[in-house]
Amino acid sequence: MTTTRDTLLGAADLERRAALRRMKALATALLVIAAVVFAVAFALEDRYAWLGYVRAAAEGAMVGALADWFAVTALFRHPLGLRIPHTAIIPSRKDEIGASLGEFVEQNFLSDEVVRSKLATFSVAERVGAWLSDPANAERASAEGAVVAQGVLRFLSDDDVERLIERLARQHLFDREWAPTLGRVGAELVAADQQRAVVDALVDAAETWLGEHPDALGRVVSTRLPRWVPGFLGDAADDRAHREVIGLLHAVRDDPEHPLRTAIDGYLVDLTDRLQHDPAMATRVEEIKAEFLESPRLRSFAGRFWDAVKATLGEALADPSSELRSAARSALVDVGVRFSTDRALATKIDAWIADAAGYAVQKYRHDLASVISDTVQRWDARETTQKIELQVGRDLQFIRINGTVVGAIAGAGIYAIATGVHALLA
Image (tube, rainbow, N blue to C red; front, side):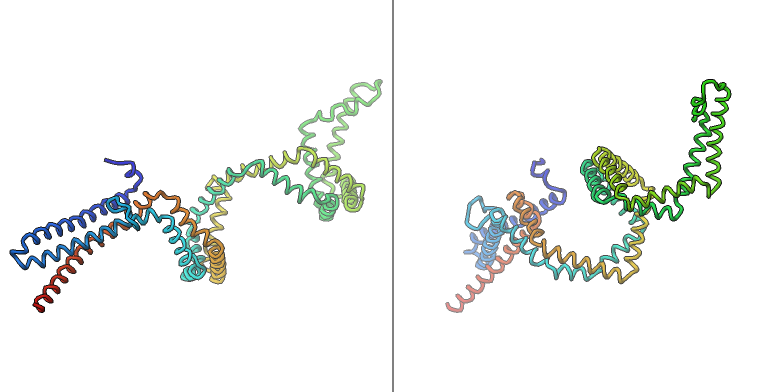
């Protein structure tokens, strides 16, 4: 029949309990046998003198068995339910035992010397490198890292991240004056003729759009002609205006020295100079920046930016074939190869690990050891006793068996010595 307590035990604990019960039965059986032998020998000792040795051996065996039974039982409970002092030691002194165990671990295991001497027996960097240099292990590490990263993305609060982005944008983008920076960057771009590519792109886009929308200019010219001008002349003027615009775009595109390009270049040179040196222009730029800061557009931009980053990262982390995951695998393999082959680098890393471990042990050794004592304190006394007894109880039953055997030998020896001395003195 399975009890509630049985359901709390694992398969290994159930096996230990069965072995413990067998050893208890064996030790108790030896005590019973010694009692039976003692009774028979005591009853027949007057008829057979040699049974005195048997009686003495059985008597010693019973004394040894009972004494060791009491000692073993007193560790875990009160013998026969009697609250004899210094019995049920483990349940009554559970907290003190936990504190002593924690102190023992702290003093003998959590020390800088022990940690450093253990780390000195092998190279952490080389072992990690050898493991990571295997592509299968790198794949596993990158997959586990992707799972962790996905969890972090889900854990992060969108509002907190958006506020952080907004704060960083204000600190690094908006706290400084824009005009001088824009002017310097613009001047460098103009000096490198980078604006020409922008002009070309705008001309191509305008030409394409006008070609696809021939009525885009509408009746821009004809509506401005006098009313007495015939309508067909107005239509012709509109067509001519459309062709002239297209021709202007062609000329600007084909002629690198076109006057319009030169005018644009001159305007940009003047604009970049004013941005750097004109206080009025700088003030205007700052006003535009302030208007943007005061509007909800900045927070909206931060939200859209974080949503885009979060979605992109989430998709890349979830896809084993993504560039991000592939790059992570390659990077891990490269790191593993370097750790395995670059002895100087491995030595530096091992020294750093040893220093970090030594510092952690020195600073947190008491906190780490307190985990043991705190855990034992939280345990139920009965469950603690049961766990410890299942671990060591079987071996402790050998004490009872050995006590029975040693008691028998001691009893027979003492009886033989006493009989010999009595015979000498008689």
